[in-house]
Length: 185
Image (cartoon, helix red, strand yellow):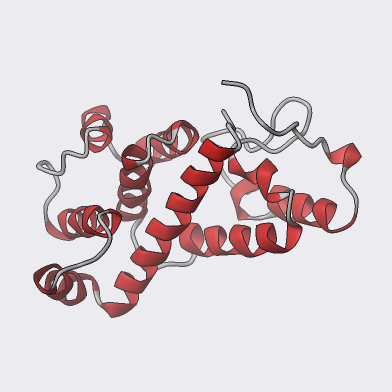
């Protein structure tokens, strides 16, 4: 399926779009080990990031939320990647799977765990990871009932439940944008 938008190369960007591009390519996503390519060979941003340049004001807010979720929450790397991959699996988001499966393997998941997450199978996850996974699936269904809330808030803490709702909403939004704009890898 062909993309509905033309990739924007850095030499064609001006003003706020260029500032956003520079923020993304110089920010935390571009630092440290790279488990997936942030830019294509022509310099355009891959995945959802190129589409964010269409509306720099909204794109800036979204990329900042994404950076906060990825780098400044209370979750361990494994819990964060489990949550992201569950959202990607639910919404069949190929780019998010590609990017975050690579990260998940780098932070200690094995291929069997990654396959289980793709199938939305949490049977191999216990403790905090099991609670994170079950909470994400409930949020993807739209809400936490009183029992799910009690378990999530007592195990993870209320601040982490807020962070998890933001994560599910953010990655669901990215999955929607990737579908609507027909953005591939």
